[in-house]
Image (cartoon, rainbow, N blue to C red; front, side, top):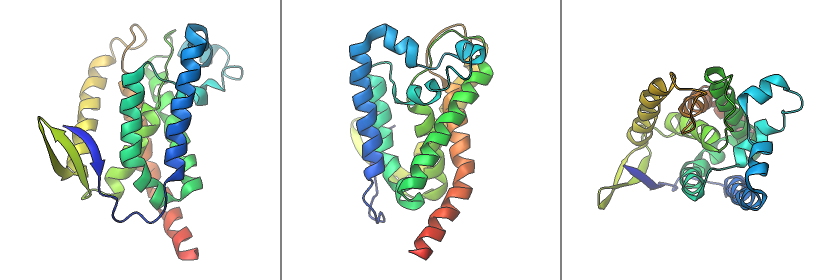
Length: 217
């Protein structure tokens, strides 16, 4: 079940923040390709290095959110951000969506850190922040329709089902990855789970802000 689009009929604003975030991720990836391995090691989040020097390594909490391990990693993340980010941005407002996105990314990073504190493996990717967007979407639009590629045909399913299956897979895989956390590279499942939970919980606050802004405007 591969999401390829959703229903934007209720969206009232142009999602320029979502598009800017996508552009920044793509731009940063080209810079990353030009910089090579040294650039990745310097600007990715390395758990053991961060714990040894939190102040000096503080920028990597943010730079790592805009880095990716390859074209597939980048493409998959940006597809999910494009599908789900615009609707969440519409509800929260542009500025608050930026804050929400970054907070989810930070929560994801610290969730992964909690399970791989001694790891020397660079952590990178927007997956954690985007997982937070999914956490918000499932709460804001549980009955929203998501177009998915199912086998060789395209069909519509409720967002609750599409995203629910995704987080269930993350939980299942995350439990299995705990034993090897910090020993091998791969998908940072705990970051996905941490970002999703943060996004879900923060939505209770941010949707109130969005409503108050709409009432005031």
